[in-house]
Image 1 (cartoon, rainbow, N blue to C red):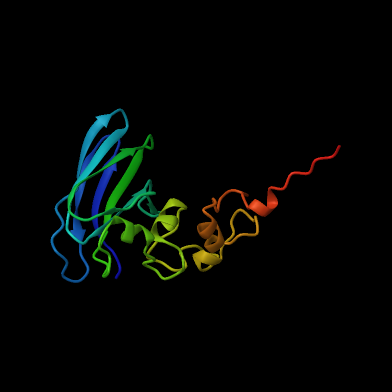
Image 2 (tube, rainbow, N blue to C red):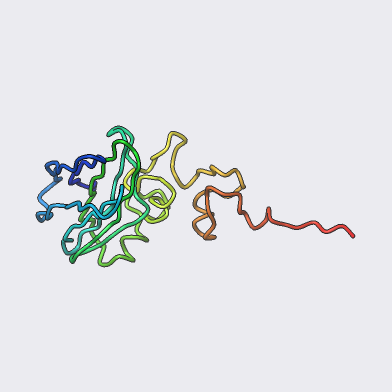
Length: 177
């Protein structure tokens, strides 16, 4: 199930809520609010809906959107601290009522796009958990951006960073006496 979005635009000088768009007939989502916290920092607060998974998108130009490296789930109060020193900064709350998800662990370990990578792995390293080919190079699991010989699927299984050459087999130390 594709996500639906509640859009919220944030600039350094102004905060304005945009109307939400929903796919299908999901339960209504309470509006996201932004409150200034300190210089260039805001708190994004929203009331969760039971059974719903939440992601946060951010952009500085309304064209290139990126997922924030976290996932939230379910009902209750949710909060995310937002910091930007950019002249313009936009955020939107991405929500989905994906079937079979019963808690935060399920939401993080699920693979909404079926590419072999967990949702939390994808948002942590800048990929779209709803798009199997969220990069120009093809399916996310087959990528090796750090060129250490481990594709994303192997990096996820080993718990290594796909953006750093940290293949355990490459970290051999040669000692010459």
